[in-house]
Image 1 (cartoon, protein in one colour):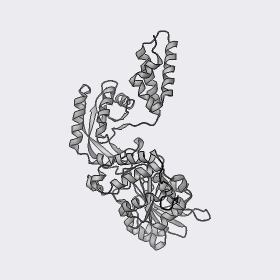
Image 2 (cartoon, rainbow, N blue to C red):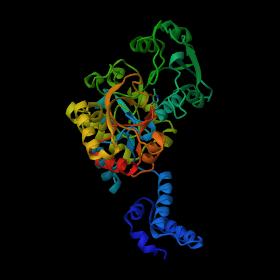
Image 3 (cartoon, rainbow, N blue to C red):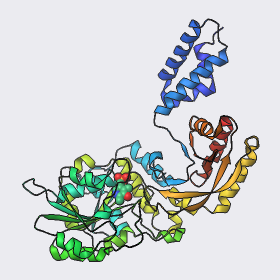
Image 4 (tube, rainbow, N blue to C red):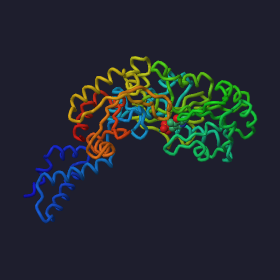
Length: 448
Ligand SMILES: *Cc1c(COP(=O)(O)O)cnc(C)c1O
């Protein structure tokens, strides 16, 4: 006999989809599976019907937004949502989402205010800049800067001078020359791929120059017979010519990464102190906060960005502002910063990762997992060549090989994203929070 609908609904492995997909969808899938079973020549056993429902629901759930475990060892994995948020930032989002706020309301005057004032003082304190502004992501920040300065009052294109070796593509379709073209700016490339001199910029300056733009190289490095231009020299050149000098910093470190065993990375504060009119950086890279783009800089330059009507289309909501504010507060000292997941991942000692790996191999003895050394990376287009020593679980699954093993992990609950190398599934523990070890163990056990 076929199982009743409510029986199937009560099965825990089916019931857990109600939260994610809603009861209507779950009932629909149950109905569809029962209809197929009725048409079948032989009556399937109840377990097989439930299996079918679970497969259909799992398929549907995979198309939806869902949490995963990042076992790749890439700390800021753009495909996996970049920086996980600190508990403080998550609490701030919950509080902002639960009720009304002063998002665009001035509590002193009782009149309409600006959302762009909300994090102004926190950003000024964090960056040392005179003023700052938050938009949707760093790509939006760059677009806003270009659109604001590179359009002449009559609408004609003005020129933006950029070093040839800084015309980067970051991934996800962000190619600097295309963004420049989109903003209506005319690109003037200077220097060669390996050599760039201040004189290259000086000779390109002209009456139609709108901006000198410096771009962080992010995901590549040029080595060998090279020459570059120091940021201070570029700023001084712009000052003399009366042309604003702006920088797309991308990753946006607020602290010296050498304290975390990484190579030095110019900080936002340094770029601001060097005198750039505007500096743009991401909220969800080295800052470890929500997706956002921050522009910090001089009062007059920020005022021009604020006056651009395009800003309305690039603005962020209260959840972003709340999470960003809470994350900035955690950058006040090293102890607080360690509460930001990116810095917790970065700072996790190898012994701790080894102990977690040992506990998991012990618990999952049937899978015969090995504990191996692995290279983790910062990701997010930052520090692409710097391996961070890490520890991975190595799973040599007999059932269908490593690719099939990784596939079963992706299909599990929660989905686990692993790497496959040399017929082995590798799960890096640096990018999985210790409080997720329990869930990881269960997912691995189910996939085994
Ligand atoms: C990552 C990056 C961006 C894009 O930042 P998003 O916040 O992802 O939009 C822009 N410029 C540089 C140099 C970057 O590294």
